[in-house]
Structure formats: structure tokens, C-alpha cells
Image (cartoon, rainbow, N blue to C red):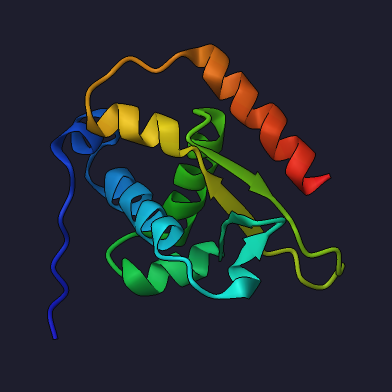
Length: 127
């Protein structure tokens, strides 16, 4: 069975094909959260590994996926943390900055001060 991928042109222009597909997958996972265990303090998050994305995107390399995720964190489009306190499970959780994502899709300027507020908010949630 063939998988079809769709990507917003503004996401494509900003991040490129593979990185854009990964971001849209994070967005899709983020907005379709329904299970209670996928929320942390009432906030939905994406709990995943580079290997789990590799299953959905077998044409990408694991190292590239990991690099893209780190770049998303640097760009303040996602916040990353290890929510599980067990030493044997270091899987990261990702929280999408939906305001920044929507500003990219709608081609609207995003205030960097909002990005700093987003990071402060995330740090409060995960502390």
C-alpha cells in the first residue's frame, strides 16, 4: 500500500521537503491526541523516537530525523523534554508551538517574544 504525503507550501518553503514532512507529522500527531496518557498536565504532547519516525518515513535516515528534531527545538517550533523519570527510558516528548506553526502556514510574522514565552511555559509544565 502506497502512502501519500501532503505538505503545506509555506512549510515546504521554510523547512524543505523531508524536514517539512516531519514537522507536519508532529502537527498531525499533536492535534489528533485522544488518549489520556498522551497528555502531561492537560497538555498534549508527541512521545516518540527518531526510530518511530523512521517507520513512517523509511526514505529518511535516522540521523537526519534526529538532527531535524533538534533543529525544531532550536527554532522554538517544538519543545523537547524527557518526561519519563526512569533512567532506562529516555524517550523524548515533544510539544508543538502551535502559534508559530500556524503563523508559518498562514505566512504571518511570528513574534520571537512569543517564542520565549512558549519556552517559559513549557519549562513550567515539565518541571
